[in-house]
Length: 275
Image 1 (tube, rainbow, N blue to C red):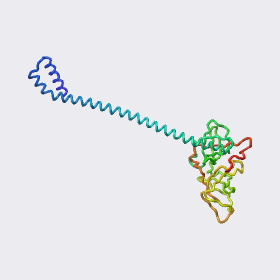
Image 2: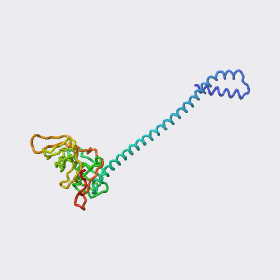
Image 3: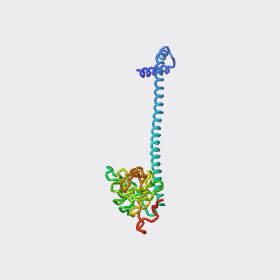
Image 4: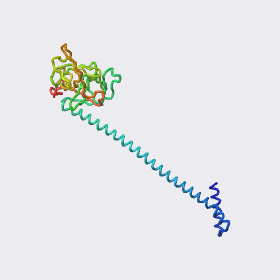
């Protein structure tokens, strides 16, 4: 209705101007239509103002969406770079063991673990490397020292399965680093147990246990863990102790497998020396 009145008023105004004079009728029409014209003009200006405001808001919204996308991409890149840095630190720690072990070694990525914990095993990807054999020791890094975590029990081309030292089938000849007394470390699913240790020999909480190298299966001096509990009976020839590994074996992402030196028919004499 308002638009119709506006059109009528505009037509009358044009006709009046075309006649060249403004009579009483023209003045009356202008007097009647002037408020309508002002209202329509105000409405049109308001529409243009609202449209400008909408376009500004739309532009800001699009810009905000672009900024949010860029922020998400930057966060993703930051997370990726953080993972790269952590991976490099872990690999560097493993490579530092090269000075401790003079033999060949290969680094692999842990990509599968025993889900039901019935058997304490992990599966390792060695890429294009071939030549691993059953019995090779699997090692992690701990403070610049090699920490035994298991041994290869199966090979599948580029993959290999390792039995962890936690497994109940694991029995490792060992010795207490401080007093050099021999013992056997058995896997007990969630922990390690030091057995066959002479009752008359002193054990201390915090004593470190390492591989003895007696059978030649593992190099001498690989860390196995630290004594956290001692079970010494008033009778019997031996005492027992609970040993905790010094690395979180279940959270390992990369490991090192040691390869015997064929030139000496096993491990070098100074390899894995107990310091």
